[in-house]
Length: 125
Image 1 (cartoon, rainbow, N blue to C red):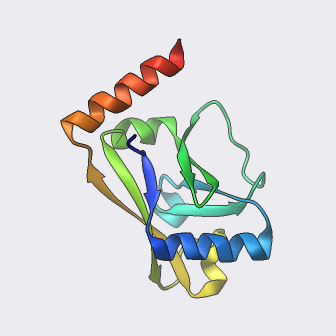
Image 2 (cartoon, rainbow, N blue to C red):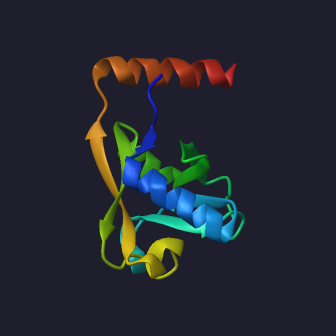
């Protein structure tokens, strides 16, 4: 099974650290504006998820969402969430840790796209 979103080991370690400090957390791929296009981390429930948001999957046991319009641009790529030094989004939980989450991506192969399309079609039935 191909995941639409995954995370590096350093990102998973940071997720566990944040969960220990804050309890359950969630992610939303920011679409720009104040925080650029970056993965934002919130205490679970602090960001209201609506019908315009798509659940891409989970990283470190935490849900990861993206806006539907942005998803249409990125649906051909796998998001790989990583951690780098520096300050990120001012509203994201990891900001005080001196690191920030960063989205990397890679295009899906034709085989992976077929697999994902089949999974989505099966889920609609």
